[in-house]
Image 1 (cartoon, rainbow, N blue to C red):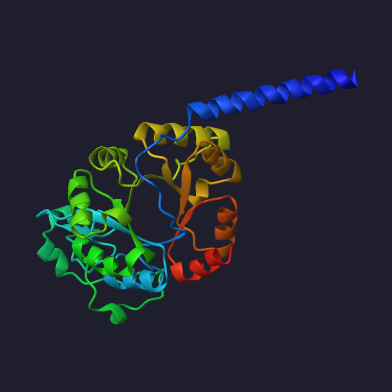
Image 2 (image 1 turned 30 degrees about the horizontal axis):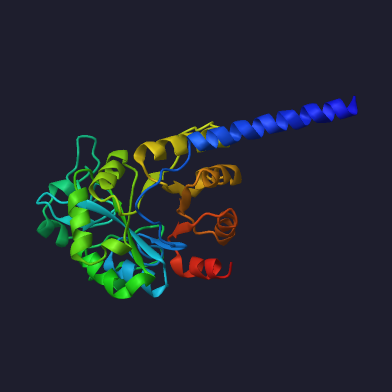
Length: 301
């Protein structure tokens, strides 16, 4: 009976392997015109642990740290200017005086409802979870996209712009700004918005673009189910580049995506041990608030 059992087990293993291979073929990464740049360490909103996030000071910090990429977020103002700020509203990171709402709490003041001049008049607000002091950065203001690209250009290939497009319909302006700054060939676009990813693929087929994804609330999918969902969505978006929350990544998920030809980036990781683990799994890029520290970890691999 033992030889028969062995044969049956071997046949079952072969069947499972064949089925997995078929699934991988159906969910394989699309072939695209762009090449994916090597960017092991990307500064999240610059070097945002010890600088005000998304400011020129923070971007200088990322460049000084030797970050391979500098990530920042783009919104549009009421008069069509492109500015660098993460939130849709100005409340969290600036000293905007917000009107008090009916429930006695300050109302959100949208970036899209203020002009560039109004936004440039605002100062940076201190953040309770960061060690930097406002006095040290009193001159900082919300930068424009053009100002940010001008700062990054002299860093040559060392620090590439990783541009998160937050608002839909501004893709043509962002692409034009990259061309005007001479940084089109060094840039990577990222976005949670599937509409933005599709627009960039259509408007600039040779520009690397990644789909950002962080999972779902109370997600009970198995690693295989999660990898299948991510693969299928990325195929529909026509991109082989994925920028995923490290919290949803397991060895199994990363391995499945790699088998299918996807490149996996991860955000946002500040813990050296987790960085080492992700790099051991073959994650190609880590976005971090602490690029100087994580650059040391990555360079020692």
